[in-house]
Amino acid sequence: MPSYQIRLCRNPDCGLRYPLTENHPFGERCPACLGETEAVCQGSLEREAIREGDDLPEGVRLRVLLDNVRSAWNAGSILRTADGFGFEHAYLCGVTPTPEKAEVRKTALGAEAFVTWSSHPNALEQVRRLQGEGWMVLALEKVKESVPLQAATYLISSPTVLVLGNEVTGVDPAILELSERVIHIPMRGQKRSFNVAVAFAAAAALIRESLIMYPWWTSDDDVW
Image (cartoon, rainbow, N blue to C red):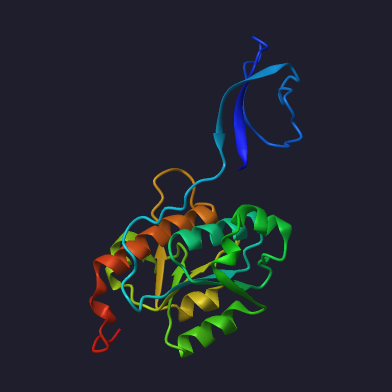
């Protein structure tokens, strides 16, 4: 069973406390000062998988579309978050790296095996295709016409695709025009936006909960 130790540097001028997994290249030398360390506790890396919270109502489907997200670290993190919030598929569009890259797999931590994914050269064409299949497209972007996510959650229907854009330029303007709703996360500090992977986590949590709290639109009689 894989295990790890918490080690403490004996150098009084350092005092680094850090985890050490088996076969890690640090060895037992302090990674900060190279001094001697001692094990102060240990644990197991085997953690029981626990599913918590309510399942989505029957028939609810969530997917995410990445429109030219450049960073492999962001792409992998989004895949991991998508799995945690019950998103079934990720459309990796434009220059968005796929799990074929080791950097994506490193931050996905195996989530790419549970969230199916596909690669597409043109995000706009993929959005049009999804809308033709009946998917509601939500774009996460702060623009003049966007509404705060918290105020729009009760208007969200299923099946839903959440679109995330490039770290610098955001969501393609043509996709914003096509989207049924453009939503944003209000910023309370001095920065104008969150990291795209962080923004996805915040939006995914609220969208998922809204689909549990307001399930009446699942009726075939509802029109959106």
